[in-house]
Amino acid sequence: MAASTQLGPPVKPDPDPDGLNKSRANKSRSNKSRSKIPLLHRLDVKGAPYAFIAPFFIVFAAFSFYPLIYTAWISFHQVELSTFDVMSWRGLDNYTALIADERFWNALRNTITIGVISTVPQLLMALGLAHLLNYRMRGSTFFRVAAITPYATSVGAAALVFTMLFQRDFGMINWGLGLVGIDPVDWENSTGASQTAISAIVIWRWTGYNALLYLAAMQAVPLERYEAAAIDGANRWQQFRTVTVPGIKATIVFTIVLSTIGATQLFGEPLIFGQGPNGITGGTNNQYQTLGLLLYEEGWKNYQMGRAATVAWAMFLLLVLVFVLQRVISRLRNRTH
Image (cartoon, rainbow, N blue to C red; front, top):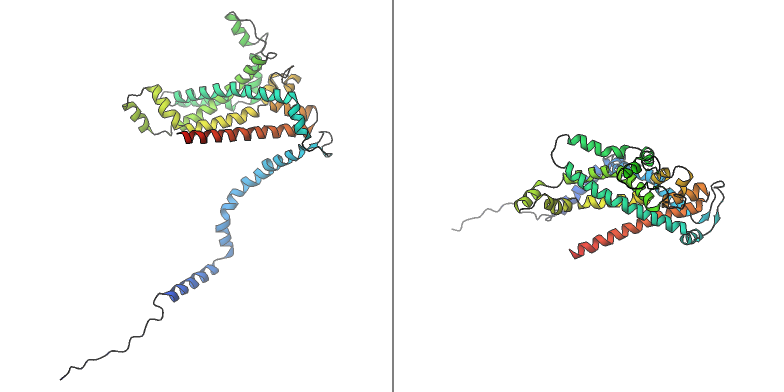
């Protein structure tokens, strides 16, 4: 007798084996939940980052970008300070006249010379000072504050003090030189002496500032590198040369760029050093007239704002050229290494 089998109810096939309908339902639910989120909340989430950075770009556009573009527009015109609203188109004539002007090339040479003899000693002294301050010693906080004090001093006060120090007849510098049998130096009327005196003001003001930048970078160098170098038998000088300097390379490049910009815009120190009308012209023979002084002379002494704007843009293009050269040199070094 055959056994009877009991069959259950028939199984219906799954209409959505891949779960497409479920995923679509979930998406529709999420879209409905998103639509319920208030519009202001969504704008707040998406627009908050732009709102946070907007003040910087607004200030930059108002006080940096717009003056830069407007100065470029003025450089193509003949504009006098007394009638600033009256402009006559000159095209590139201001630039061609500037290139043919010997005063521009003289100011450019003076700017480069003063920049070199003030930047190189300044950064070397700042590097050595930061290396000394990096050691643990008593009163380190006092020495660090003392190093930044010249930077906190105003340009006018520092330039006036150094002007008195470098006076030909009653200055302390010539008095000290006389003690060792050296004749008094005419610091203002000599080209090399005047540029050296102005560079001394710049060095005094900015060495401590750069030293603190180097010090902050040195303290970020891991101590394990110094320990490994000491185990390999490196002395203090070798550790400084092979560990410290490569470890703060980015900061050194930053200070070089910053010092180059400051040297290109040098204005207050030579102006006050000249003690009057000679300060605007950079001495009786323009022996220490910088590009900043030439800009001031063209705009506020000769009342030619178009030519002054041309000098300003020449300074800007010079900085761009220096930046491009620095990038090219750094890329070539990276390829060689």
